[in-house]
Length: 116
Image (cartoon, rainbow, N blue to C red):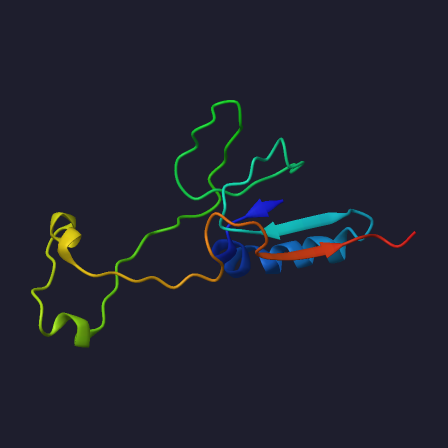
């Protein structure tokens, strides 16, 4: 299974851990990465995506809402006009915090291989 880092770490760890405890003979490979993996070419049976599905050959089911938020500290907003619409955002300085860099391999992973 492939999933974005933030969604996977906040929403998938607990249910996957419970699944692995209930079904110990099932091998689970969970890869958290913010890059858009190719599910077929990279051998994933399941992938979690945030947003609209672009490949119509894949089957999608909504798991949970993933609202986007724009946040700013009061110190940032004090000398500036508060943006009232998204159209006013382009002139603003932005930074973001991510748990892993986008478009790179790696990320976090949880793997359990059954004992033989």
